[in-house]
Length: 362
Picture 1 (tube, rainbow, N blue to C red):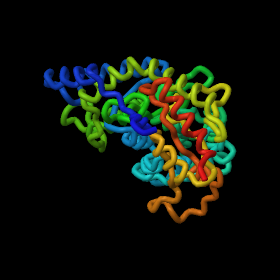
Picture 2 (tube, rainbow, N blue to C red; picture 1 turned 30 degrees about the horizontal axis):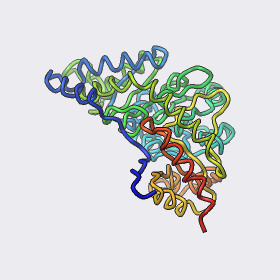
Picture 3 (tube, helix red, strand yellow; picture 1 turned 90 degrees about the vertical axis):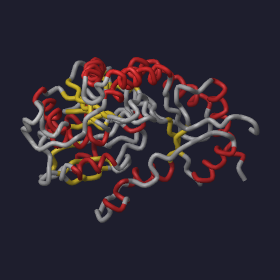
């Protein structure tokens, strides 16, 4: 309505506590891979059942280094969804391996285990499910496939901070788990990533890989890179981590409100044994999504499409004979509405009302 403030599709939190944490680190003079990073790793470990945590400079770096630490390279294939951000497949390519795309479950948007089973071949070394939009993938079924064929199971949990399956947190369900701390995630560190693993040897390799192959300065043990997290980022991440439970519960509450109020379009599915983190609240618009999005914009409701082009249709990945009907359909229909913790009850009613009014379009 005229005069109303538009509701943004996402709203990163940068408050006085985050600013104070950054200033404290800058004044300390210890700004890269120091005590704040170590503390952040320890505190994040408590979220993932005490697993080893290794902080890096982005979620993409987390995925890339994890594959390298697991020994996955040019001779290998990694099964991934095409319905995801390109970083999922990019990390496989950066490790020298080949991404193999499998279709998704139309309800959860996560890898369909039956499609994964059909995609496994003699060169398959790993399965990399994405907990898309904050909904956990079917990890028990994927674990059964992985264990039966001695494959690594790497969780792309970059959108799923606070999600769980059968009471276990994502990130603690596979061989390793990877998180992103980009500003629009459920929690952020301005930028950064975290790798979670139960294996102390893999954790040590990851620490070498992120720091030029060194544990001690100038004593390079392997070829590594510079993918360290700064102490400023870690300090901000520590502040955000303390509020993550509150924020995730608010996202769930907002999602429940929207799902009860929205009519006429399919709302997000939540599996019976899953705790959805609602990084995104995604509906389906089967007809003329662009016009629907414009309609919402005119009524002050932000929205976004994640992801309009499946990875297998992007230029670097074209050429395969992929048949992914559920992926292609989702890419045509999905539309994510605001669900972030800054929303008030009136905002939620406005969002639902704008969606419900889509039927008024001529």
